[in-house]
Length: 339
Image 1 (cartoon, rainbow, N blue to C red):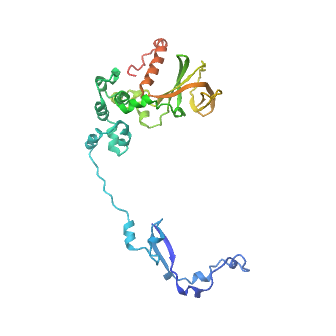
Image 2 (image 1 turned 120 degrees about the horizontal axis):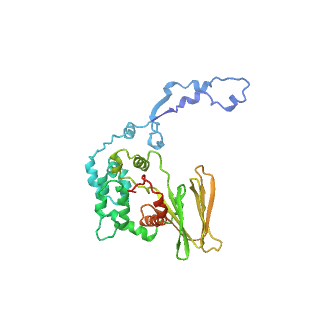
Image 3 (image 1 turned 180 degrees about the vertical axis):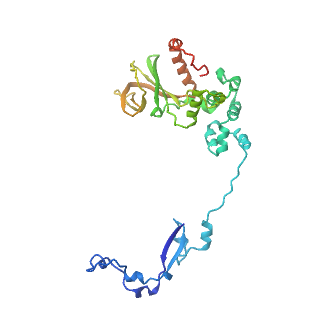
């Protein structure tokens, strides 16, 4: 509410004299800081203070400039009552939530967010769409979905075998938005031969914000000082990871870097032949200073694989088989068998 000052128009106003002009001050021979006699003759009885809400239109007031008491009553804040439902009711509602609406359901209130963070919710979501006639890896079979550690990521990955809308996304190929890799850290890179082309793979990871759920899960899995890390349903070593795949006709040697690099920018333009595209991948250090730029020309195909797609783990598995000899020689007692 704001206070507004209004002067009531009167017929006797003209008897006070003429209105002051700029010549009374700027061109006056005498310097006077005293207020004009015209304003001093206005009595307090002619000034009316009334409470008027900000942004109100002039047509909502009467002809005398006064707002009616009925309008003030209608503009007063209304008391709204909220119902606090028990969390068991939200668990019953969660049984009818579609996989693509999980985020919307978690943002309703704190209790729905607590439901999504429970193992019961993800287990029920998996059972709702499980079909024994669909072939899946052993990790996504009901016997392996009992443990809580990493349950969330396992259910999400299994839905790309079981849930038809997610399977259709893989078929139509909606993973061609290569601009999503900007700002991610470069973990590793490799290349492979595919028919008459060469495919270059860049494994990238987004940095976690301090205090976020993925950051807490990583810290919990690193410490391993209690049984809580065995019940962490958010455990996912590939959280926030992507693979940028660029297919070109020519072999290009990718240099080795001794520092941590990030994708500063990726540009897609037409190649010199005007028939294909050219990809420029710009890498920078943690300060944002440009280190190098990898140019691929011409490019046959560009795609981005997220950690929840089955093809992502196929690429990771192929790279692991190539490096298996080196991995056996560098094995230590600190290796994590569960990952």
